[in-house]
Amino acid sequence: MLTRRTLLACSLAAPWFPVRAATDFGGVSEDEFVLGTSAAFSGPSRGLGIELYRGAMAYFEHVNRAGGVGGRPIRQKIYDDGYQPDPAVTNSTTLMLDDDVFLLFGYVGTPTVTRVLPLLKKFQDRDMYLFFPFTGAAPQREPPYGDFAFNLRASYGQETAGLVDNFVAVGRRRIGVFYQADAYGRSGWAGVRKALSRHGEQIVGEATYRRGTKFTSVMREQVNILKAANPEAVICIGSYAACAAFARDAVDMGLNGVPLANLSFVGSENMLKLLSEGRDDAERYTDLLVNSQVVPSYEDVTIPAVREYRDFMARYNPEVPAELVTEEYTPFPHSFVSLEGFLDAKLMVEILRRLGDNPSRKGLEQAVFTIRDFDIGIGEMVSFGPERRQGLQGVYYTVVDQGRFVTLDDWGKRFANVG
Image 1: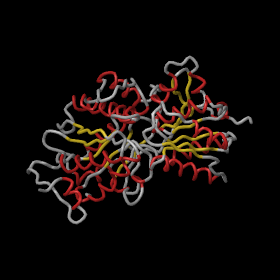
Image 2: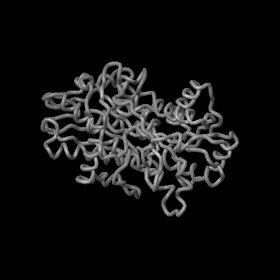
Image 3: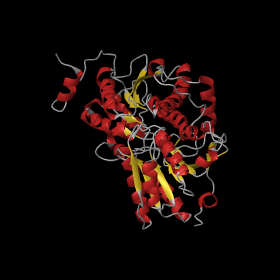
Image 4: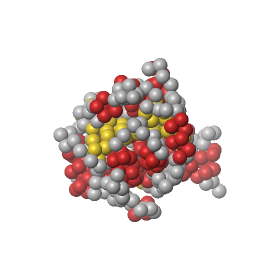
């Protein structure tokens, strides 16, 4: 008896295709578009998958209530991978071969995405693409897998370069790195190293942690390693639970006057909540945080897409499907992650519209390439092409003020090195 596992193992020799009804175009029928998602809805990084999903669903729900795209509502087929690579591979195999979704959308994380990319290459005859993963890593942006993914957000290379350049500009040249010991952490580490080399500098110290680390974990060893390097700033490449634990212990152990920078993936609101909840002295732990973002502030209602996002989030208040809720989590009314999910969905809808009356996977790539100078509503136009598979380039910087992340306007005033 042939199983899905057997078919997957044999696929190197000969791709396998399920028999479809004549009216079935693969994930799209006369009734709906089906998008496949594997993301973190459990574990210490569950806030990322939940917030990204909620932001996307706020836009999809609005479109669906207006009749969908060409009369077809958009439905997501969702599986939880807990931010772990093996479940992500299993889920993606199921989505492509059993569920026969139209495309993959809204994945979370470098360690999961980097394991899924070879599947897309293996099954390239199926014209399956990954759209707008929540990661700024390099593998889905370059050969041999870049042709199977489309990115909206800026890359980790752009985020780390911006952080390094700004720190160096205010006299903080001795930069250490705290990072997750996997493909995500190494991607950010490489970005910091490359950016420092342009200034004639090197990473002065580095410490790692294991993926899945919780906020209750102790980071004394990592803090001691970096303290010994006498850094003037530390760039953290991790998820919110581990980075919050590191920030907590860094302050408690006297790593004083050293800004702690985090990339957009960290999940700023979740990190801030862990560092602030139940504390009367929360400012001690948050005053020197600086987080890069790949979307503008959701507090800036002068931005059209932000007004639209806040309206739809309040109007529809999307909830994660009950079967995916296995651990307690309280969503945020607004977050950088859900705003990114909202923009991902907005662009996804525009691409689906451009497929016309007879949508098929074979038309997806060309439909994306028609996106040129598209106004997504944040002041930066989105463009794609055969040599451009990332739509946005902007990086923003935020700091904590009165218990919330706000735009950083003056690096010199906030972080000038007076030592």
